Length: 186
Image (tube, rainbow, N blue to C red; front, side):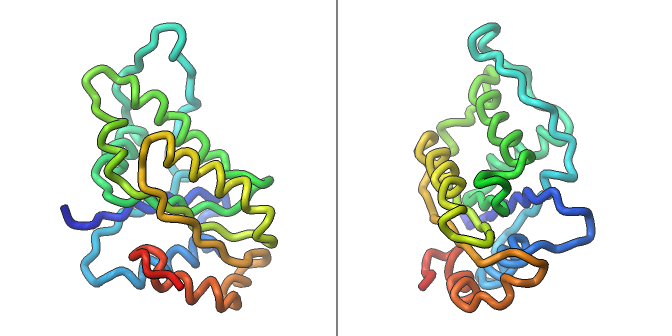
């Protein structure tokens, strides 16, 4: 199967404003071999219903509809999933948390194979923040999500964020971005 990267941007920044994290992710994506399939979805621009935990009541979920169906299909079609997530209060932005919560539902839709195909995928994180140490709780959380589904952990690409455009001055992050998605980062 040829590589297919799913990029899920999770910032709640106003539309039309490219943040540091997405800018860094696009730099990393530009370094992929020409013709590598890429799908980008902005989670904050999609209709993501709140997750209702039915694991201990009905135990099953109906197949997703609308944008959740779009995300499920994109998730299953990808070989590599990249969370493009700035650090919000030492954690992930709420659209990404909602998306991840729905993984619990997708594992319990009758007739849907979700957990097994996820084990063949690689999960990566691109993030920015003012301080690398303050990003670590979020990085650990995403890595644990990969471990739970037996996904390969492709690591985290961190850049020095802050005011718009500041990551463009982080030469270490820019260098790492060049090989991050192919696994050849410095």
